[in-house]
Image (cartoon, rainbow over all chains, first blue to last red; front, side, top):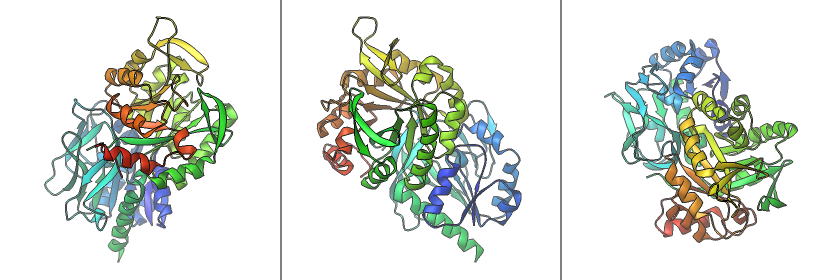
Length: 203
Length: 254
């Protein structure tokens, strides 16, 4: 079973719907026992960073420990941004610090938020995208992005007038700035890959 | 490269999709969930559902609709119509909407934009502007509220810029003059608003031919084009629109 972390932000339900739709066993929960027993965790998030971190509260430590213990974790959008050390959205806020880097405002000189479908170029060795393709359109909606400063992280990029990280992988910790749950069939394939990674961990 | 978006709009009244001309003379266009799923399959980039009944009872209906759409459609969708409080926005986002659009409530209380943006992030707050060319000289285009029935003294271009400062993440700009006419988007209005803000602008109202989509994107600088009549009544499929735009050199997600 995959546990989608239930905290008071948008899109938790969309993520559950997407996993259910592709036939994955998914549970929306904020209980410590569920988090410990889960094959893998998904940290969604449609919210401002500070609000999301505050709302996550003590769950943050549980999620961090589970991820550091090798449990697959997928962060989506603000859930992805929270994997990093710090964000400067509406003041400075600390993230989970699992992947090193800082979340900063998109540079001026373009429409912000970065909103819509952009082409993501995937390096060869990211198993989240296995058999999906190397150049894929995904749906983005964000004003901040992560400057990844972690030499253990593999990174997929997109072009928004600069070379912007769109997804990371560090061990079994995954994150996507885009929304796989809202990226049509391509996005559903990525979620299926994550589910298979989680199941593989358990074998 | 970020692609230009094709966004079918589903005006929902009493649980059915309807479409009118100049906001009047509504025709039935089908079931919202079925139509939404069909557009998603055809390659729509996003969907917009506008509850044009917007009564207290219809608000419960729209939450149920959002839940049903979210179970069946895996592309982003925006919900709007009659939203008055941040808690209502919260409910709709939690029910599965990606974005929520506000119109009348933001005109009456602009602070709702700031409050919602700080809680949910700018990217999910869409300011819907219904604008029409002012008859007097007080403003070039005036903002209308209450589904087009309430003219205000507010200048549409200035309002868009103010809403951006407050934290709106996108402008859904409907020309009431062009709406339902199939004679093309209001290029001048769209360009004026698009130049005044740095957030994405969705052009709405007037799409009738494929060239109109191109004109809104290239001549008016729209980031996305919204349409209703020409897709609901089968004039063009989403794929035809995208293939046309791609053939003229515009980046789309085909």
